[in-house]
Length: 245
Image (cartoon, rainbow, N blue to C red):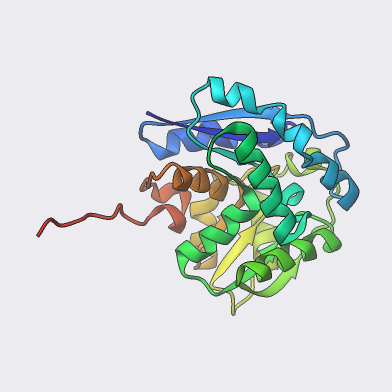
């Protein structure tokens, strides 16, 4: 059994995690602990407070007691808003506090883009344009070329959490770009686990979503690779097999 821990801000799309646990179809357990988000707003000052060390530290002990082997801050906006270096500091502090390997959804996106071998990406975000542009800057700092960025102007995670297939697919289609090798949908408040396969079929390219890459990142930290095609191209790489000579 591999136990993975997630610090999830508030309550919006956390039911993606038990859904993904079922979709993984293996001995992987996804443990979610909710953090206090303070003000629910996709606004820089509110996001900096949401991702502060004390808010993240509050849920760490529960994950440790649950036997988590790694912990991921399951929030995109309240990690990339700190910038490339600040987001590294956030994760290092979390790792020290937890005594476990740690990461965040923003780094999960960067690592997942690398895993797919995609050099050019498009961003279709729920956020206002100014916050979406900060995510694009973070991706550029990771080495990715962002060919287009589109924000949807949604201020609260609570509103994002009410979106279903119609809204998600419309945002994805509007934010895609013909030059992009992958489409990224940030925001862990957005329900996407049930839609990834259909989105990839519709767009004809890999789609990376916040909760999907967050789980993949936790598996990466735990040195696990799971083949789960229903979770998209990111989960279709077979485990490496070493042939003994």
